[in-house]
Amino acid sequence: MAKIRFSERMRERMTLSFEVFPPKTEKGMQNLPKVVTALNAYHPDYISCTYGAGGSNIGRNREVLQEIAKQTVPCTHFTCIGLKKEVIRQQLQEYLDNHVEHILALRGDYPKGWTHTGGDFDHATQLVEFIRKEFGDRFEIAVAAAPGGHVECVSEDQDIEYLKQKQDLGADYIITQLCYDLEQFKVWRDKVDRAGITMPIDVGIMPVTTKHGILTQCFSHNACAVPRDLALVLTHNWFQKDPDGNEIPEIKAAFREEGLTYSANLLNRYLTLGIHGIHLYALNRADDVSQVLARSGFDRYFQSLL
Ligand code: FAD
Image (cartoon, rainbow, N blue to C red; front, side):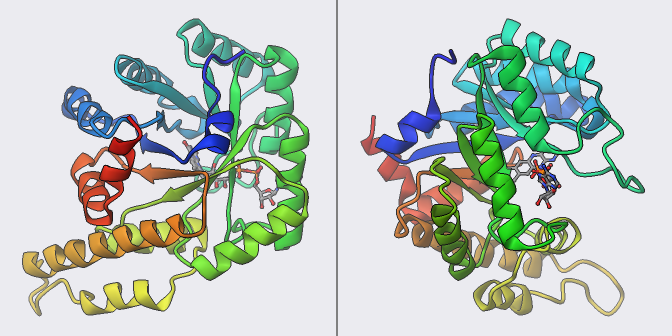
C-alpha cells in the first residue's frame, strides 16, 4: 500500500500541494532544483508533476519526480492518450520501482486535431480500473473533476456520475480543475455530496498573473467561468500594448499585482468553505506561489501545523 495516504490526511486536516511541469529546456531543468526548494519551504504535503499526452515528456517527468522526491512526496500525473495497456503497465511499474506511489489518473487533453485517445482507454474511469486491477493498492489514486463541468460533458449530472464511477472503481481523492466562481463550486459540491461521492476534494487554484495565461486557461482549454471580480482584473489591465504595438511593462506588472491579490483572496474564500486541500498550480514559478501564500496568510497557517 502507498505509505502515505493523502486521502486520509485530508480528512484530518487541510493539505497543501503544488503542481510543476517538466521544463522543455536544459536551462529550465537546471533551474528546477531551486524551484522545488523554494516550494518546499512551505512544507507541502506533496508536489505533483504533469505528464504530456502520449508520454511525450516521460523522461523529464521522471527526472522532475526524482528531484521532488529528494525533498518531499512526489505525485505523477498520468494520461492514457495514445497508450496501449502494455505500455501503461510498464510505465506504472517504473514509477513504483522509483518509489512514486501517488498518481493523478487522467484521460488527458486530445492533441490538436485528435477526436479520440488513440490508445486502449477512452476515459480516466478505465485507467483507474486498470491501475487497481494490475497494482492493487500500491498507488494512491487522485482523479480530476471540473466544478464548472468538463468542456465535453453532456450535462453536469452526467459528469458527476462519471466522477462517482471513478470512486467506485477505486479512486481515492479529487483534484479540481480551475474554478474561479465560488457559487458554481458550492452548487457542484452539493451535487457531488448528493451523488454519494465521499472522496476528499483538493481544490486546484491557478494564480492569476498574466492576461494571456488566464484567457488561455479559461477559454481555450477549460470553459471556466470568469466571475465579475476576475473580469475586473482583466478589464483594468486589458490594453497592454501602445498604439505602435509595443508592450507596456507597467500594465503587465499592474495585472500581475492585481491578479496576485485576487488569487490570495480567492484562496481565503475557498478556506471559508471548509475544503480538504489546496493544490496550487505553481507552473514552476515559485515567486507567484510565495506571493499568493503570503498575501493570503496561508503561509502562517501551514507553518503552524509543523
Ligand atoms: P475523463 O474523466 O475521461 O472525462 C473526460 C470527459 O468524458 C468528460 O466530459 C466526462 O464527463 C466524460 N467521461 C468520463 N468518463 C466517461 C465514461 N466512462 N464514458 C463516457 N464519458 C465519460 N492533462 C494532461 O494532458 N496532462 C496533465 O498532466 C494534466 N494534468 C491535470 C491536472 C489537473 C489537476 C486537472 C484537473 C487536469 C489535468 N489535465 C492534464 C487535463 C485533463 O487531462 C483534461 O481535463 C482532460 O480533458 C480530461 O481528463 P479527465 O481525466 O477528467 O477525463
